[in-house]
Image (tube, rainbow, N blue to C red; front, side, top):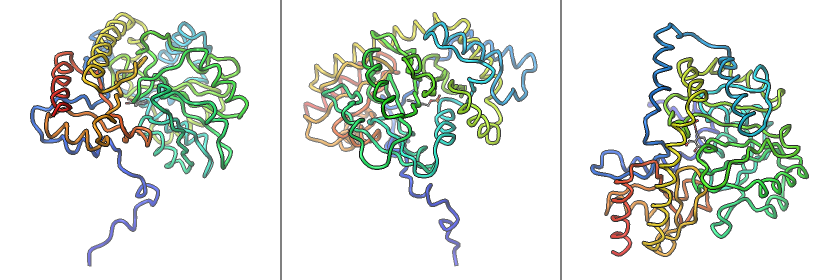
Length: 388
Ligand SMILES: Cc1ncc(COP(=O)(O)O)c(C=O)c1O
């Protein structure tokens, strides 16, 4: 008799649905001549000086573990960056932890904060991993829906009206994946007041902070009375085009950082040393390279949003990140159907909005971290698809 392996598997993991993005991209594998606006990954190579610093570190034999918290040199650079950019003071010895991307920092944060069944509020549409990592940590993810009419911003009335178990944590992400939405300082101050009233702790995923266009980015922790109740999470994947290096960081109150460091030291030990040296170089000398990439993304954003609106797919103006999130409601199709048909007929891959939560129904996500020629061709194909 065949052994049923399911009997050994963890029930929580079995109950998790697979990522909606993955499920869709299974369809793309093996298809030829696809224009993919699907992946949330910069199309630029990591700037050369950053790559060179990693090569240099390998040549000089830097091939060991680092401190569990990460290279002190990198933590010092991060502290300097956060002070210079957001007037935020963190002690590099105790209040900053280098992680394997923002992904690990988010996972450590929920594991260090949650007791079984604690509620975590998550405005959606949102990045695909938030709800699963909360479930895996034994918590209770509770979505807060947002709407296009309000540019997918968190509604304070919804936050204040929460029913059921008292929530403990709110996950914020701005500029947002998948909507590109960001907040002005004034809007964030209003959110902060409510958070204070509700005694929530905030995990603020600001991975796209360097890709803010018109509105300068305000770090949530820099708002009055928020530093003690916020974990600031950021990394190098997006702004510096360093997805493969797997370097992120968390900055926040020492007791939380100590708790996260415990989990990190038993599970990961430390982030890869070459990536940490590369991240040091990125912070020291990467400003011009980032600013050039940001300008190019902004140019593409203007082009793609304008193009989508012209072909009848209403699209709000995303303030940051590299995603457009147009409505496809006028076509009468649901998001999955639209994305599948567009792929079959015109070989353009976009992500169905439902991959990011229920409020994503009626929308698709297009990444403009893709060359301008491809964006132009994709828009032509989409126009033909809609006309047909
Ligand atoms: C909002 C958001 N957070 C976190 C991540 C993961 O980032 P990292 O590569 O640093 O793990 C992504 C990647 O797409 C993202 O969009």
